[in-house]
Image 1 (cartoon, rainbow, N blue to C red):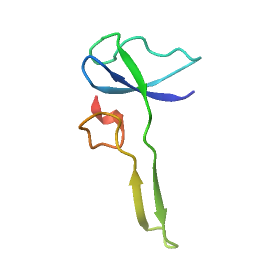
Image 2: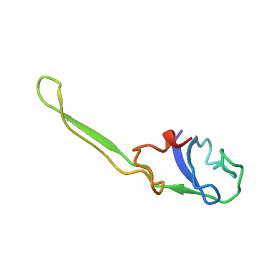
Image 3: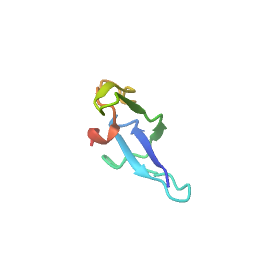
Length: 76
């Protein structure tokens, strides 16, 4: 069961939701507006050396305008 990220056109906030059976949400979880759209989720990775220390870390930028978080879950 995939978790998708959505952004509200009315309030601009992002939210994640579990989509079961292809039933996408109809309204914004934050403000209740009906104009929402699915956004591309950012992915991240870490590279570790032989001892297990993180040597490189990266994450895509958030889909929300003006947000510096790598996950829309923090926008709630």
